[in-house]
Image 1: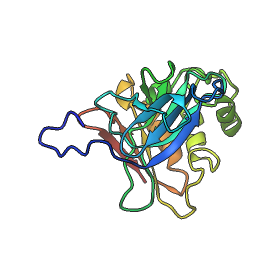
Image 2: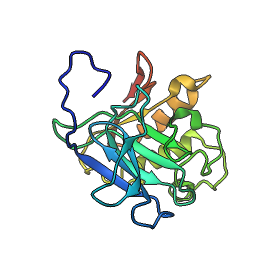
Image 3: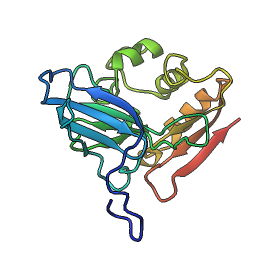
Amino acid sequence: MTGCSGCFNYTTTEGRVNAIAVDPTTTTNGSIVAYLGAVGGGVWKTTNCCSDMTTWTAVTDDPLISTAAIDTVVIDPNNHNTIYAGTGDLNFGSFSMGSQGILKSTDAGATWTTLGADVFGKPLDGEHVHRPELVSALSGAPVGTPITPEIVASVLAHPEGGRKGVPRNARVIVVINKVESLPDKKPARETAERLLREPAIRAVVLAAVRGDDPVLEVCSR
């Protein structure tokens, strides 16, 4: 363990894993590439799966995201070098972990960016959106069209989109990240206004998760 002064060193220990994604282009045992999402911190990668000799390396070593709990890891079906990782760990109990947004890598885990509000105005395509065809189907917007608050809100509020798997009576709070990157907060506020028309959504947080003051504004009824 490093980076913690005065902490107890647990050396090698086990931890809970939420997700494993295997690169479908690698099929030879012993050289299979896979990624896992750990509750205790970050995305890990192996290039020598799968045996008792398999080794894993943390690929989210940015100090701001290295200890982020990971709930989901997905490989883009159209580009195996593009990886998405959903942060947080929702267990509906005392052991749930907060989210820092969705991470994206376009170089097989070497570097990562956080997705967020800077997507407004960008084209609805694979470069800016995970599974653009699904987003198109849920929102009714053609692939390639500029991303608007209406598109974002419709997907986040959709029972097969942002609310998929959420219990019917759950109170939903949506976080829109990277709002600080917008020259004008209007698109984020319009998205919040549209989301709040959905009875299950109680509030929308406009956030800069990686900033010193992560909560910029809370929108509610």
